[in-house]
Amino acid sequence: MLSVLIPVYNHNVLPLVTALLKQLRKSGVPFEIIMLDDASDQQYRFKNAKLDFEPEVTYLQNLFNVGRAKVRNVLASKAHYPYILFMDCDAAVAQSDYIAKYLEEIDKHKDMPLVVINGGVLYRAKKPKDNRYLRWYYGTHREQKTAAERNLHPYDSFTPFNVVMSKEIFSHFEFDENFVTYGNEDTIFGYQLKQENIPYIHIDNGLYHEGLDTNAQYLKKVESAIDNIVSFIGTDHPAVGEMKAHMRLLQVYARCQKFHLSPLLAKLYARAGQHLKRKIVNAPSLFKLDLYKLLYLSAKLMPAKAKKK
View 1: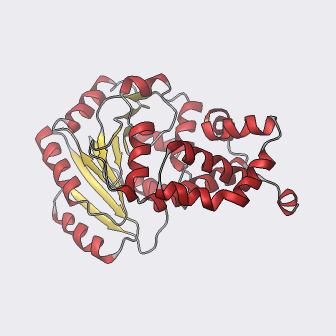
View 2: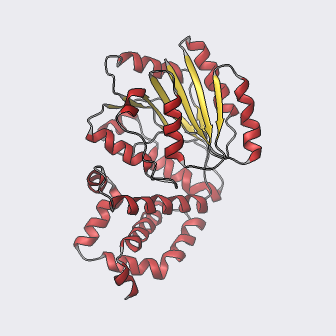
View 3: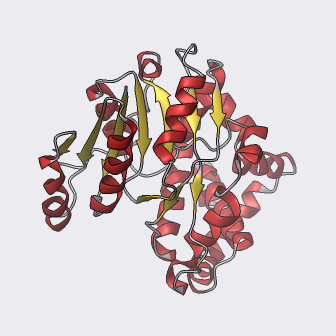
């Protein structure tokens, strides 16, 4: 009935999978756990490969890193059951009835062949070390929301961190494999759900996000995600319009363009972008992070001729 699919990269997944196996075996439903390691370091592959001895677990390994979008598509293609549960490898089970809640929700919507159910993301209450504070603070203030809050705008900020969907979804569309580096392949998937009117339901069934990047690492991922946005909005993909209309960063940029401020923002990035970046690393704040995103995007979207001036 349920295929649990976990992309793996440089993380010890033994605690996560052990907790999942306990709940899945107790549920009594047919299940499998399939992991695909995207060319992790040897130390992680050696630890995680031990799980392959569990009868319900399959642990696959890539020789070369291919990116999260392709890994998820491959995992979905190998799933044997009609419902798939995607999660990230740096998640942790937060509740003893985590699997039971999803099975209950699946049963409730069994007459809907195309459905997506999101359980949400949780963060530990304890503040992490200063050098990992930015990712935790962003998560607790922007990502950790109740189901009621998320259902107000269900398609905003789609994430496969903790989501169940019918496998049939992937007969209609997959994650865009043009996204090899980090960021926004999941956002595009969410916009496609909206365009196709796929029911997207949010429930309170969160997983903890444990793998907190350092402040510097997270900023690199932010830049990578924006680079992907810039590449994507220059294409004729049908979801480009949805991204421009609903992504907050692009909405703010469009308002700046309207008042002819984008060239100034690009110049500000050239002159002060690295200084602002250092300030964010050393003294994180969401205001400074939002400003940096806007400046970085403005610089990336500025035409080459204007940059030379």
